Length: 302
Image (cartoon, rainbow, N blue to C red; front, side, top):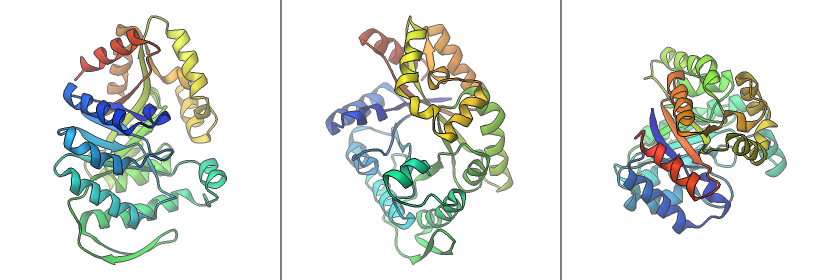
């Protein structure tokens, strides 16, 4: 299981210089990747072009870009341009549906037929990334283009939790990006569905990237309670609530990676055994000691 960092907590106080330093340190320390959510007013793909010259061969990934606000032809151009600037440095274009309250209430867009939307999105996006040409008439998207690409295609992964989304991801992408999903759910639900869908489509085994809040601490109970309070929304959104229920977790903090060095090591081992190919730690230290211990443990698994 490859170990990466999820730097999305930095978006709460978006300092581009701080994010650049964080990514450069991750590269210097040997982490496999550096992932960033697409939230607020920081554009992740634009930021990646600024990071590319200072982060070596560190994989940069979006976790994730919501599909509804960006037409797949536009996102294809953004991703191809970013990959062209990055050269041979790997880029993962992580996309996802987001959630009905965000799309309808915050953006005023329809969230009707989300799986049809996702399938049509990938049917337009993938050929544009791979060849620069698409000829597709779908229910949610139509695109007819044939143009030159500025560079090679990035990898595409999809945030998928439900069975139909996982099947779409397995058949039409390189894997799934998970948040707030525990090892029991990965082993019994996520991995079997997406792996079978990829096999049925003749695709290689998909990546399963799991990201969770992570903290090495001597006060597991207090940290889990703090995480549950901070990430309470994920216990309320239906798609995440379903995953927590599968795990037998009452609160989001219950699936986080928290405890002593020995406990955190065992929890990471459980994720790997469940079929997780990539883990992105959202570091959650409350003080310098917890920050240092958490980073040291993660580096010990590189």
